Amino acid sequence: MDDQGMTSEPPAVDAGDLAVGEECREYLAEVHQFLDGELGAERRTVVQIHLERCRPCLGAYDFEAELRVVVSTSCKEKELPQGLRDRIASLLREVADDL
Ligand SMILES: [Zn+2]
Image 1 (tube, protein in one colour):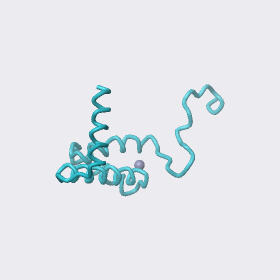
Image 2 (tube, helix red, strand yellow):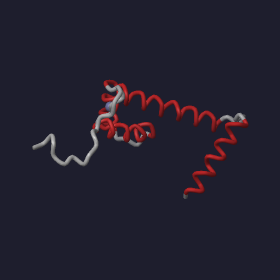
Image 3 (tube, protein in one colour):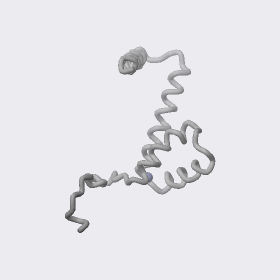
């Protein structure tokens, strides 16, 4: 009665080894807050422990962390490559258009 019933939800796990479970989704949402320093000490520990054990989440965390470093250092440096500056400017314009 449970396998052939009306399951409206698609299978949660996609093909490939980057299968991110429900639990991970929650952690991934918290990675942003983690990096922003908005998580409480207890939550930070929980997220950190998960990151140590879960490769997909650690990968996402690393990517986010690196992105933040790149963004913050580019903002501090006055000499941005012109191409990058143009890209950021047009991205900002796009975002502003959406608002
Ligand atoms: Zn995970």
